[in-house]
Length: 489
Image (cartoon, rainbow, N blue to C red; front, side, top):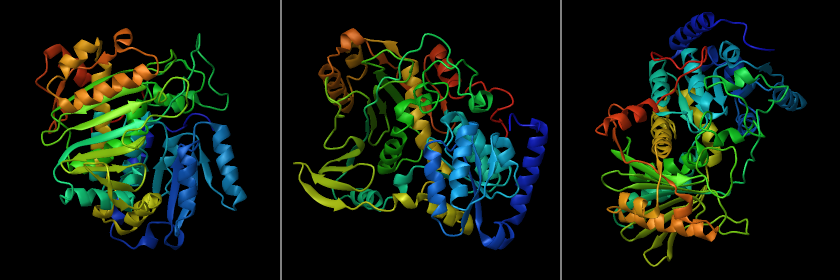
C-alpha cells in the first residue's frame, strides 16, 4: 500500500463521524463498543523499536487484542505482522496512519512513532473517537502539545503519555516520603541523562532512504528534507526537524520526575540553557552536553545531558551521586536518588536512610487499558495534561539552546552568577569536558538567553522584542500539507 487514497477532506469527515460515534457510546456497556466479548481492540503505530515493546506488552494484558499495525516501512510492517501471525494472531497492516485511524474496528491507538508524528496521530485519533497511548515526549513542540490536551478534552478521550516511571511504586513512595518532609524542604530537583552517545557519522551528500520506506509518509508534518545522515531510523532523535535531542528522548522521563518532585503543575517563569555538540563532528544538530535551568520560584529544576564518556579513552558514562540516568532531589536534610525505577533516600552525610523498592513501571500500559474500560481519567498514572507540561519543559530548554550564542567561560559564568546551583552544575559541566580533553574556551558552548515565559498563555513575554518574536515562533512549526496540526481541534 502506498500513499493514502483518501483525501484530507474525506478523512476529516470520517474522523468527525467517528468522534461523534465515540461520544455517543460513552456510558454504554463495554461489550457494545470495545469489540467482540468486551475486548479492547488496540492498534500500534510506529513499530520498529519501542513500538515492538508496545505490541508485546498489550499481548500480555487480558482482554486486549492487537488488531492492527502501522508503519510506513513495509519491511518493518511485514516483519511485525509475521511475528503476530506466528503466534496465531491475524492483524491488519497499514502504511498510512490516516487509514489506520479511519478503521472503525479499533478502540485505542498506541503510538511509538518518531516525535514529529506524536501530536498529529494523537489528535486525529481523538477526533476519530479513539483513546490513545502516546510515547514520550507527547509533542515535538509546545503549541502542539496543548492541542493534544484540547483534543482529549473536546472528544472525551483517554490519553496517557509513556512516562512509565509514573507507575513505579518505589518512585511514588519515595517522592511522597520526601514531600512529607522527612528530609526537610526540597531545595532543588535535578534530572540526569548521562548516557553515552556515539557519533552518528557525517555524510557528504543526500542519502537514499530505504527502498521499503514511504519517505513522504515518514516525514509527515516535518519539513521535507533530503536524508542527510547514514541511518534514517533512530538517529532522527539528533536532528531538530524530527527529534528533540536527549533532553526530549531519554531525558523526558527524568524531567517528568523532577517536576513531579517539585509538585509544580505549570511551566516556569524563566528558562536558560548552556550546551553544544562536542567531541565529534557529525550530522546531528542537538546537544550531547547540556545544562538547562528552570527558574521555578520555590525551588529550581536543573536538567543535565552528558553524551560523552566519563573521560577520554573509556566507554563508561559519568554519574552524579551514583545516578547516571535518573534524578537527585536535593533537600535540607539530604537527598532522594532514583534511577529508572525505585530509589533511596540519603542523609546529608550520604548515608542511606531508606530504600524504596522498584515495581510497577511495566504496568503502565495496563493502567491505560484499565482506564479505557472505566473511563475514570483520574485513575491514569500519567494523564496527558501533565505529559504536555513535562514535554514542554524539554522544548523550552531546546528553544533557549537554539537561540544561544557561542560564549566564553567568563560570559557563561556572568549569565548565571546569581544562581549558585547553576554555577555548581557548570563547574561539573566544565570538568566533564576537560576529562574528555576538551576546553570550554576553545569549544565556546552555546549560551542560551534567559527567556521569560507566561504559563497562562504558554508564550514568551517580557523579553527583548526581536528575541521574543523569534522565541515565540519556535513554540510551533510550519506544517507540511496535508499533515497539519489544526488550530481548532
